[in-house]
Length: 264
Length: 264
Image (tube, rainbow over all chains, first blue to last red; front, top):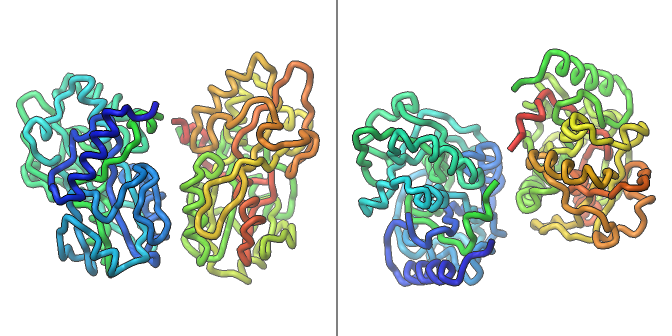
């Protein structure tokens, strides 16, 4: 099933506004279309990033790898990965050095960047919403909370790091539905990696996520954790490549592709 | 579900006999365990092979990528990819120059080889056999027939080539079952890419496969085509990397992993 004219219009309007400088989390934008995490590295690091993704498919499901130096995604014809994401992060030697709304200068500095688009759990939120499962961060107009866990990813060459997860509080009687619905989308993280008990993931304080905004967990709700495409950013912090460009957490690349394209 | 002691014994006995020099197609060996295609390339070509696989997941589902210079697969502890496959092919500048039963000399020549294990349709043959769908090449003690098609793969850097398919003649009243059963294994090629009508795949003569043995298609049977892990070998022929090592078609690497591990 291809995207409807209405959906495509919403996706293009969003990319155009981000290109013009608007900054906002993208959860809920262009309902039903796939959203993606971005990581761009110099060509010399590309094999290790792709290998890291291959060895850690749950947090790093690769949707597209662009050719070195290319920035128009086939998932959104006419798009420009240098400008069409609301906010970017620039990393030097593992340190976050800048957050920008336009990454053109980074591309001028590194014209050989290889860009990876990685599946995002925002993609299956449409399925959760359609099943009337509440999505708290959308209700509150916040970014989804994301946490570094104590679960190491499989290393790949110079790249290593712990898995990052996103968390959604789900009413206990809807957890099974949330598992079932998200499990139908293995290319966008699929089923949760963990339900309840943040401590066993190494998360000390649910109120203090490393990325995104603090959550609001209500009585009768269980924290449910999904593998997160911010995982490569944690690997960059730990592995210190000389340069990397990523999206800012929660500020994704919106494609023209229907989420149903990635149904298992 | 992990492999049974009987299955593991069968897998290890097979690898040991191949290590000692036995040569035979592996279809039907170690029933219920995953078999894999091998392609090993110098590190300088590894990114393009991995990218080719990422862009062509149906013919090239990656099960494992080993570190440069490594030859013990995590899918079969104690294995040695230099010796444990019944027959290997060595390619130089796109030409098949040798077929050997022991690839140790190739590894001495290129100690930085990066090895890719790619899913094989032999894996789901166990599921077909369990459903009493006849597997003709096994009945006849032959290798499965494989064909180069006219369907181009998505290129990746210097790598390009057409998709290779394997063919099994299936009774018309079992085709739907064969589709359904193989479709449950997306990591090992999954559902057929084509049912019937070889001409539209660019296959001029079903009796003359490019790889493997000629088929025997009986009255009331339909030729069913699955994407094949020999596809990277066709890409090597077309793309001419200076060196590559592969398994010989139909002569696979037998792992210790249950096929059910790869159920969708």
